[in-house]
Image (cartoon, rainbow, N blue to C red; front, side, top):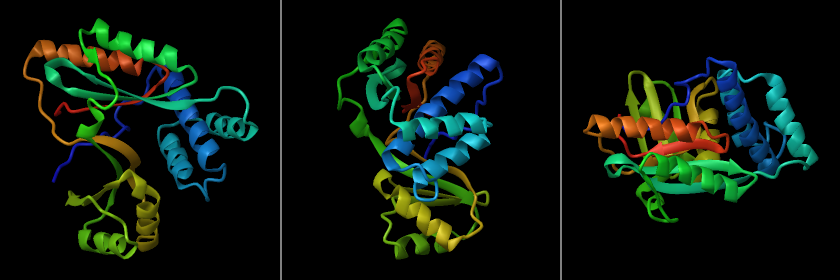
Length: 239
């Protein structure tokens, strides 16, 4: 129970510069998802979910529409995913998920974030195997058994399911994302997802014990999140 995940509602930008960064990150992600899975949200569940999430985070419609139109045109930047693995203060593990049109630039920028905070960027495979790549669905409800039954009937490989404070949380392998979402929407037609995304979840978490480590960790996260190529940062630090 109580597996840690990130609810990305937490820090909506307050300044125009910060908002521009949020819009840019959503624009890139919508572009990639639309280009890969189709431009119609009704036929692309990942795109529909991303658009819903962008609207909740107050991303203007023109930003969303522009990203989809850009994907239809097939021109301009060609963003590709990149995942970097590293170690932060206190030996904590960190995954940095990026979308980039210049992998060499992005790698250099991410490495600089680590080195200037006296942390270490690792080689591929050093950290990723200690995270689960999971689809996470969180919605209002208290009938955990009904949710589990609907998922099992749809042959969804459920990793875990929790019910707490009138909220149900479902964890499944990332490859089960679409099937899990369709099963839940069919079973609960009025469902509204509080969280509906794919994340990396650390298999084990631990708190940072020293104030110096906590400060270094916050500085590292700030440096990474300031980079336009960085989409998400996952870690093993216990809140």
